[in-house]
Amino acid sequence: MDKLKSIYLSLLIVPLLGACSNKDEFIKVEDQFSLNPTTDVAKKLVSGTNLFVHIKKDTSYTVQEGITASEISYISHTGLAKTIFTFEVDLTKPNIGMEVSTPNNSPQYGMQQMTKQATFEDSEGHEVWAGINADFFNTSNGTPQGILYKEGIAIKTSVTDGINTFFAILKNGKAFVGDQDDYENVKGEIQEAVGGRVTLINNGILSTQTNATLEPRTAIGVSQDGSKVYILVVDGRRFHYSNGMAYDELGKCLKAMGAYDAINLDGGGSSTFFVRNTPNFTDDRFEIRNWPSDNGGMERAVANGILIIKK
Image (cartoon, rainbow, N blue to C red; front, side):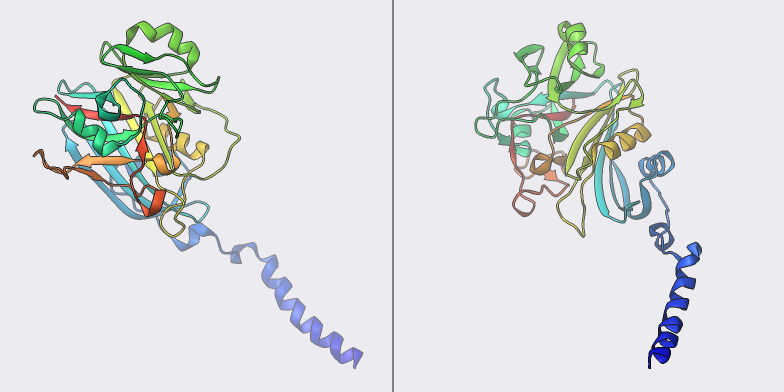
């Protein structure tokens, strides 16, 4: 009986060992998919990172001349579904600008959905065509963590801690991303500014990250000369649709897009990416394109945001 048992076990184990010893037979994520990027942004991301193995959706559209949006759904190198939304803004176009929004366009702290904040800035000759959420904030009273400037006026110059960073539009029309040391050098030149936190790219070099948590994210970067702005929003907390990104992924993507400096903005349920869907001033002219993770896709009220303007 023992002899028969030994023979049976040997017959069972040998094929298993043979299969496991052949590394070519292991299934890899890359073997199941193929990459076929079609838009310029997707091509940059595929060639400039190792994060993509399969693209499910890849679209791009011109919001206005100088404002290009892209929406990409893909399978990551870890086998997870991800959906991202990007803007590339060309500030060399004389009628394109970027401004900070606040609830009711007021210098007072508060919280309001971005599609509502946009209505208070939107007018003939000063049309809001797109926007995102911006700084982290106190969810009880809407006080932002970082600095806040509107129309050249400093509303808030204090920060929460040493991690706080900022995105600014300078008085010369150029975009700028920096930390607190940079702020001391450029604060007299700031026209518009919002705070951020983790630095993703500094002087063209990816910053080392220790937090690998996947979350919905909003991030922003600028070209070396400050003439272009790159925005990335990634949805998360919805497994079969999108699982968010870690900081290192954000940095790699923004660098591939063209950013020389980049920071992380508020994410989670705050992450908001919207566009204008008509030149008319209808009540529903601002359309959320991403899936905010609060309450099954409901837009969250936030402290401030960044608007892309056609003058």
